[in-house]
Every structure is written in C-alpha cells, then in structure tokens.
Length: 438
Image (cartoon, rainbow, N blue to C red):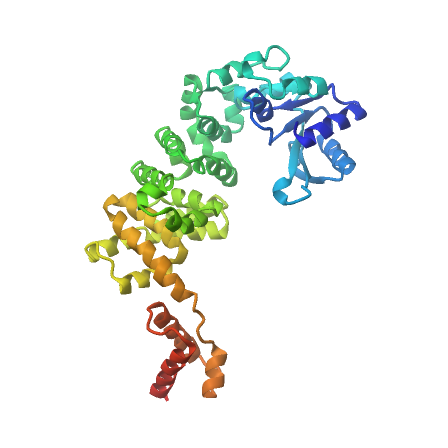
C-alpha cells in the first residue's frame, strides 16, 4: 500500500471521519488497472485544508496549499535518501453533500469513481484484478465498464462547459491510456472547442505537456487539430505543421536508426534529451513557421524563459543546417560547420533532428556533423578560455580597454577553428594584434 495512504487511513480512523472520506478519481482507476499508486486524491466532507494541516503535523510532513478556492491541499513526506523517494497525497473538500454529488461534477466516467476509505475495503481492493471487482466501488456513471472497454466518456456536457480545460483532458487521457473517445463525447469536444479560449493558458500548457511528452503524441495532436481545438489555442498553427511534428517525433523515438550512430556515439544525444523540456519544446516548435509567433505563444503559455528561448531558437534556425547541406552539395566543410556549431553548441542535436525530419536524405550529412561536433569542436571548446584579460594585462602591461573584448573573441574563434591550441600561441597572436593597433 502507498505509505502515506496507510498513515492517513490510520489518522482518519483515530479522528473519526473515515465514514465520510473517499479515495476518488485517478487513484481508483489505477487500482482497477492494477497500477502502482502514485497520485492519490482523497475527498473529505468538511474542512479539507484543516484536515491536511493536522495530518501533516501528525506525521511531521510538509503541507502545501494547492487551491484555496476549491480547498485542495497536498501533504508531502520527504524520503530519507533523496527527493525521488518522496510521497504525497492530495486532500480535497467533497463537492456537494454526498460523494454522489462530488462524482457528478467530475470530468470523465473513469475518473468519477470512489472507494470508501475504511481500511479493510481499501486493502481488499489494492491489487485486485478488474475482473474480480464487484459492488463495493462507488461507480454511478459506469466507469468500470468504460475502463474495461477502453473508452473515454464525459460525465456530462455541462461539466465541460463549466471548465473547458476538460475538453483537452479528454484527449490527454485517451492518449495516455490508449483509449478511444466515445462518439457523443467526441462530438461535444468539437462543438465546444471555442470555449478553450476562456481557459488560463498556463492550465492549457500543463495539459499539452502531458500529451506532448508521450512518445506517440502525433495522433492526439492531429485529433486536436482536426477538431479545431488546437486552432483555438494557437491561431497561427496550420494543419501542414503536423507533418514536421510527426516526422520529428518518429526520429526522436528511434535515434539509432535515424542517425545511424553506434550506441556509444548516441550517448551525448541521449543525455541531452534527458533534460525534460528539450523533447517537449522541440516538438512544440515544429507547429510554428513564424519565430515571433512561436515565442509569443510560448510566453502566453507561461513557459519558462529557457523554454521560450529554446522554442524561438529552434524556429529561427530550423533551416540553417538544411541550407548548409544544399550549399555544400551534401559534403561537410569543416570551416562552415564550425561557424554553425559556434552558435548552436549542444542544441545542434535538436536542429539535426529537425533537419532530417525536413529532408531524410540529409541523415548522412547530419551524422558527419555530429561526429565533427563531438570529435573536433568539443575538444577545442574545452581549451577555452585559453587566455584571459588578466593574461593580456600582465603580459603586455596594458590597462583594461574595450579592445580586450575584440581580442578575446578573435582568440576564441581561432581556437575553435583549430588555428591555435596553447596559451603561448594565443599570446603571440595577441602581440601581433596589439602591434598592428598601436
């Protein structure tokens, strides 16, 4: 059993509110699917925030207020070894007088189920196969059948109207679980698509992240596009953008075959894409042709500064390597490639994927570019800074001046081009530059 759930059941029994407390939503769904419990929502009747505070104090855990308006709080217990060892549960106020009132207001049927908190009933169900579950789970909208039949079905259209973000959530759950969307629900999402414009963009961003981080998100993004939902979020996005999205996602899912690199040579790319936002932002960038529109959309989504800059950089530079390929007739020229690498650095990995997605025949050229970056450019870059402003002052008895910036930039350029490899060589070049100036 989830460590915090067990502690909370014990706490609720001692405090005497087990009868009016329920495990709700996704946790019940995951129990029925036999999945490990990670996200647990507990609905309690009464002051949920007070309950959460008292529980956190009782077990010496952290209290986090998630939503004051809807009375949702999180209790987090830090792991003894590291942060990844932490556990949390969310405690919310029951919406309505009964659990049935609460479930009636939820988004989809598979999230509109509840389980009494009484410890015996919970323990009975943990790990129980779906086929053996019978009457004890509270399921007024047929969530168990929809789960069994792999169907996403809305609880009511009224609930979508009250919170249009649920329109996107329907597609998100369909994608995450690989379920199909029931016809009436699908029709409702199409009809209500314009209501998305009333939702705060940061809430939309969170749902899009859930979808885009999936390895096979293209199908869902196409459905969002076909049903006019994406157009209401990003007016500048066009249907033909999805071709690049699809091809980029396929390459990301099979880097080895796409690039023809050995397992060892792939390691830098694998490490690069371990940074969570890289894949998400790379795929998102493919939806835009105008760099300014891409940047503005990312800002409106309340994405971080580094995410905004990354998306803008991808759109601005998307065709640079492809243009270089055409200019060089497919044969790598070290001097010109180095000029690109000076600007791109590690982001060359993302831009190479975009290049192959645009033109698959560039794969060999891109493979050679990666080798040049790893075996030539990075060892040279590791030499920097080969000299500093202090070296110039001390060696030539000069005071700091604006010329230092030009000198240091010129030396860096020569190092990256392989013209100089030592401090001594650099100082000789600096002497010539100073002599020609004075």
